[in-house]
Image (cartoon, rainbow, N blue to C red; front, side):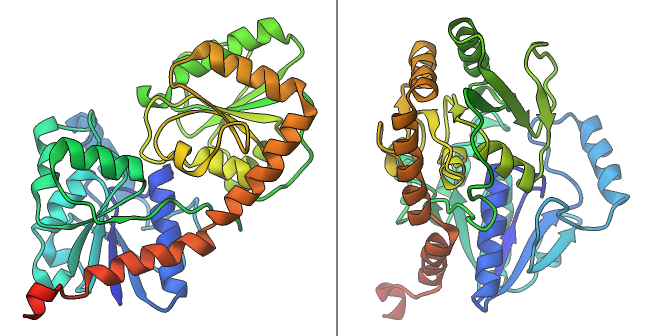
Length: 354
């Protein structure tokens, strides 16, 4: 097949990483794959002035994904419009604005597929975001949670569910866990639960003063407690090392479509105290390979961290079982599921065959 992935940008986010992983896997399987992104940035929550700043910044650099080893073709286009897109069998979009653009593309650009990561409320005009569920496109969801909630709320059909795959060539055990150590992945988006996470860590310091806490993230925090070291934008090797050397990962998210970091931590042998958001209850089991608590429950998160930090037997059980879970969700196993979902979108239905 000839496949085009249309991304809104190529900055490091969980969703972009998953799409690039799938693009590489499809390329390696023999498909002709192109990743496309626009020079003129989508607005999302930027002001017009910020759009111009980003546009000028992009003009000064050649098309590239510096943080990722992309093996397929990369194409930066002025705008996501038919005249700039290659012909293909399938064209795949993820974010609401790219879905609108591929829906307008000519038929020669391929069968149109929307990979539904989650409902993107807050990233643009809500009426425009909700309008994507009425478009004539095929849909693939990242989780049963996304399929169920989107179908119930918006009445559209999502026939295929393909989970995120964890790249075990990048995430694997790479170091010995330091005693009483906690890793916290920070992002300012309210749905990521950063405020909850910081409140949990404050409580944990009171209860276990000797705890060693580290934080990292791809966005610099504007306000940050002086007692908590912050590492900006660690590369894959460093993030793998941080996870491998931590007793436990704190994942306090309030909303996810999937929730990949606990699975990446599992692949590194690091247990997680995580909230019950997105697909986490679909791939993880409480007290088996993770500690799973209700979203927003600061006390439960704090107690969960205490349990893992103080109980070596529990930590080892979670780590061992987590490695098995990560192997089941490895990119090597999951990518063929995504490939099959795309192939099915190009297969004529019985009614279209007559």
